[in-house]
Length: 241
Image 1 (cartoon, helix red, strand yellow):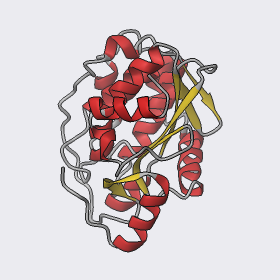
Image 2: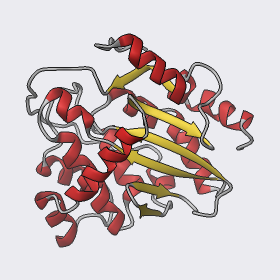
Image 3: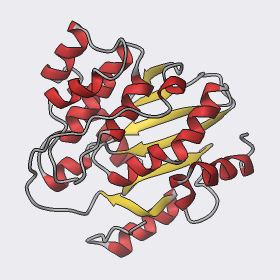
């Protein structure tokens, strides 16, 4: 997997090492140029059946997935436009979802929107707003995964429009409805979007994805998060299996 070139590579590398950020990541200090809109190839997660069973609730600027009483916590920092976050969602996140379904772990998501400032447009903010709206329908885990699965090929594509997000929602049974559609089109949860970005910035995280296991960075160089089997082993080493 390629490694992103950061504008301030040395600064980003230090922050990444401290917080568990892989060398392959989206930096909050990378990117430039105007965005262009693009059509989405709408997809769903192959783990949709598992994800559909997972409860989610809002806690401040986070969205918590799984049993709140689960003994372990995986903390995830993401941006919907970040391609490496998509790689995580298609890789290590699938191992985490299975453990969450078994009640062994809960997942705390801080979903940022810093890439909008990097590349222009409002794709990340619109996607985070829609994800927040999906919590009210009890469909967050499934919709969240579908958004990443449907991510446009380029970060510069400002493709998470309201219409496209609703097309993704069509693939999640029971998600569409008057209240959800209104929230997506009118950015009902813009305050949550702002709070989530603020929490991301206050955390000291300098890019995404960042994944922590019980508050600590995973063993190794962080690349295991992009492979389900490799991350399953890392989780087992941390006592989660």
